[in-house]
Amino acid sequence: MLRILLVIAVLLLAGCDAFSQKSIATICEEEQSLCSDLNPDSWCRAEKSVIIRSRYEDLQKPQDINKYRLLLGFEDYKKCISKASQIEHIKFKEKQTGRVKGLLTAERELKRLARATRDSKEPHLLYYQWSRHNNEEALETFMKYKDEGKLETSELQVALASYYSKFDLPTTIKTLHHALELHEEDADIDENIFSSLATIYMKLEQFDKAYIWGVIALEHDVEDLDLIQIEALLLQQNSNIKQLNKIAKQYSKSIDKGDFIRPI
Image (cartoon, rainbow, N blue to C red):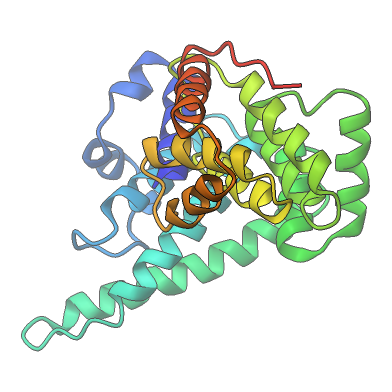
């Protein structure tokens, strides 16, 4: 869901006032082809909105970054519509057919967009081509961009961290911390940063830090994260839980204000 909100926010900020004021209904009325191959019922409404707005933005101003947003949008839409398409309708079989149509559209568009962006040098797409299709040439260029300082956004640092996470946990931590340093006030944030830090610190048996980031993750409504085990380990070590909660609160406040500085 956060990724959907991130895409919408980027599109609204990037577009002109006239675009940002247009409703999905208006876009579909003016450009029917942007909407007609998606499911017509109310299922996956948020995911459909991302795709329709992304398509409209790309129609107005074709750019590789728009295609990246579309790829993410179709990934989320496919997850949603694949579940919806399995729901049987006894009275309204056409709804089932419409959802299957949407699923086929998602599969087709993901393949088409992946082929169309295979040779793109846009950093988000370089990461996408490597992470989804194991394109080593794309990874090589992506890492070259890192050396050239071209990945200095929170989103791209999270992508870079996912690469390091396979073989270098300390560098992964440093990169995720830097992603938080680059986070701007009032901007949406990838909550997975917090749960990832908590998980990595657990693997490294640095339970105090795992607890701090776990607390922050829970504050950001991250699910499937249980602090009971970590807290029990800390109590066995006579750790000051109250002090750790205080640190977590300080970190969270600085992140929200956009002035986080990674701990030494």
